[in-house]
Each structure stands twice: as structure tokens, then as C-alpha cells.
Image (tube, rainbow, N blue to C red):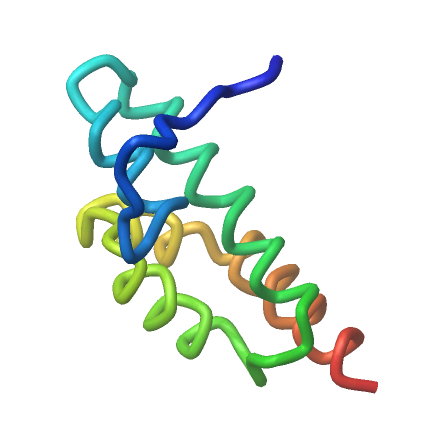
Amino acid sequence: MSVRRRTDCAPVLPYASYHLRRWHFMTDDALFFSLRSRAYELAETGRYKHWPKVADALQAEGFVEAVIRRLDDDALAVMMITRCCEQART
């Protein structure tokens, strides 16, 4: 599914701000899966050493803290994101 972003404004954090604008339209699960997907994207960049650094970056991008905590409670996802960080750094 292709998502068109508004081009008449230039938000500082386009990815997160897009999701924050859609907050009322997205279900909790949709927001959670969007956050998880973004976490993997950040981990694959190789800029982060482990999950806590990725979580900090997600919060800086403007994701809701409650959703980040929900992902943090998923031990398997945290382990896989950390492994993804480690593999990207090698």
C-alpha cells in the first residue's frame, strides 16, 4: 500500500509525525506493528548497538511511550532487534 505524504509542509520528523497525525485513525495494534517495523528499520542501519538505543531513537522520532513500552515487554522482539543491531554493525 502506497502512502502519500503531504508535501506542502516539511515536518522535522516526517516518519513519526505522519504516524502521530494518523493516531486517531489507527488501532493500537496498527500503531504497534508500525513501531515494530520502524524499530527493525533503525536496527538495520547499524547506527545502534542494542534495543535501548533504538527505543531512544523511536521516542525521539515522536512515537508514543506506551507503545514503545509494549514492544519492550515483548522479550522475543527485543532480542531479535538487538541481534539485528549486532549483525548490522559487523
